Amino acid sequence: MRDRRYWLRLVAFFVLALAGALLFLPLAAGGLLMWGLTHVGCARSGSPDQFGLAYEDVRFTTPQGRSIDGYFLPGSNGGTVIVAPSLANDRGGDLADAAIFNRAGFHVLTFDSPTCAGAPVHSLGYLEAGDAEAAFHYLASRPDVDASRVSIHGFSSAGAASLFAAARRPELRAVSAKGGYHDLPVLLGVGRDQGFFMSLIAAGGRLGYRLSTGLDIEVLRPVDVMQAIAPRPVLLIYGSREVSLPGARQMLERATAAGVPAELWVVEGAGHGNYHAVAGETYERRLTDFHRRAFDIPDI
Image (cartoon, rainbow, N blue to C red; front, side, top):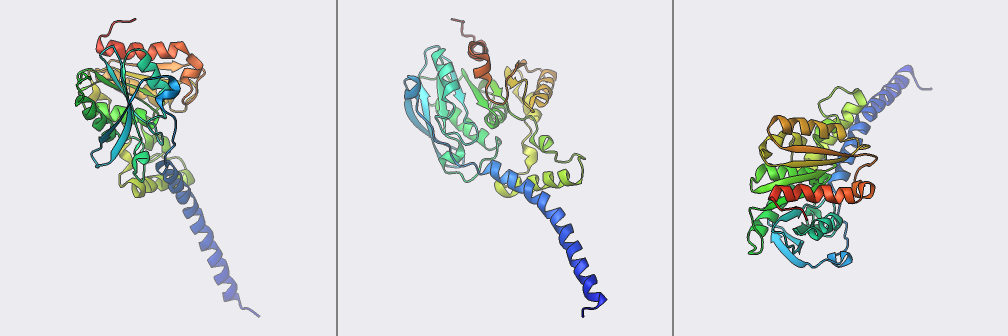
């Protein structure tokens, strides 16, 4: 017959195991969430042929020495728009917006996201800004591109990357960013009092980002670079149903205070990414007019 000490040890073991599980599981959940966001693989898609667009296959090199494939769509109005790839997209993943720009007369450059070019992880916008800078340098080397008339456009994580790139490269004349985050640590609750378990999930996310990318998640704050874009114009496009819309309003406030001629267009009824489907021709006109004004190109 087992004595009292045995049962006390057994109870103590279960208490410790339960306490460990209560600590480990939310930490692991946050870490796995971030692992999934940064290890996205590559979504292969179509080519400009599907949109009836003329194009050239191009390749350029990133600061990390990776070769990135792109599509260059020749235009006629003298302006060029870099369409940065969102998350796992390859060079054809954002061709719907590229086609809008190109049909309006702009040269357009699309290119592969880093995970489509062999990178093991995606940093959610911070390191990808370096790819956008490399795209600009490639364009500046082309005799058919006016390097003083290049702008950038991106959706979601590519919206953040576009803002980071514009803050680093004063040569970029304008930025349009759709549906991105303003401050990813804040969205994840890092450093905010939000209860025991949610705080552990946020801590796990922070650790997961560090282990995945080697970076502190604090770098993912586009709101903090808005002042560096002044005096160039910024267009923020968000749906009225997006959870990140309050952050967009904060970016607008920060930009305005810093002298950035920024505007926020809220597409009523839209969620994350379906702005064109909801707004139709208004979306096309709003987007292309913004970049035309940045280059002083007359309306057509």
